[in-house]
Structure formats: C-alpha cells, structure tokens
View 1 (cartoon, rainbow, N blue to C red):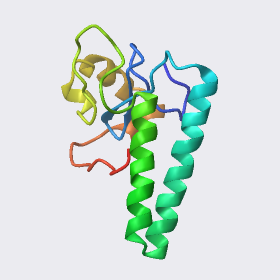
View 2 (view 1 turned 135 degrees about the vertical axis):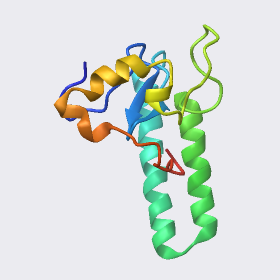
View 3 (view 1 turned 60 degrees about the vertical axis):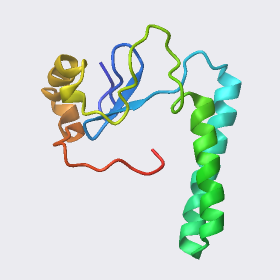
View 4 (view 1 turned 90 degrees about the horizontal axis):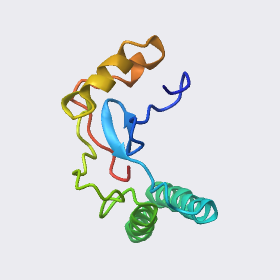
Length: 128
C-alpha cells in the first residue's frame, strides 16, 4: 500500500491513480539514467509550455506540447503499452469501474487516500 500522501499505484505497477482516474506509469524496464533524462526533458517541456502560455506565444506552446508528448512516449506513458500480456490500456478510465475496482475500493476506505477519490466528473489534463 502507498505511503500516506503518496499517489497510489496499482498492484501490477501499470497505473497510478489521480483523482480517481488511472494514468499509465513509466516503463519499469527503462534504465534509471535514461528515465532520469526523460523526466528532466518532460519537466523542462512543461515549464516551457507554461512560459509560452503566460507569454501568449501559441507557436512556442505547440513546440513545448510536442516535447511533452515525445517525452511521455519515450517513458512509455503514451503510445503502445509496455506490457506484453495483451491487457488493454485503461489510461483515463475511472479506477472504480475498471478491473482494479476492488483494489481501489479498499484503498478508498483508507483515511489517507480519501482525497484521491474521483466522482467521475473530473476532466483529464491536456498534458497528463
């Protein structure tokens, strides 16, 4: 079970749960150094996207969004799934209506994770 205040991760390590929705985790087979490079690029691209938004520069925003997307693909968070058992990608699905429903219901009962519950009305973030 996750530490108090941490983002819960499904028992198989495929997804983390944010506001009740499943989001694909990075490919655990990535070498730690490569993962660190990709995460640094992702964070840099997100900062650049924010700066472009604040500056009102749509071209810079689109370039930064493309960098975010490329980093997320390289991390395995988008694109083809990194597991090979044929299970579908459940990204953006509500945890409570997924194959992880029983696990999530038990997690919801823990006081440290009450605020992680989703009511089905959340909208997914554009660069998540």
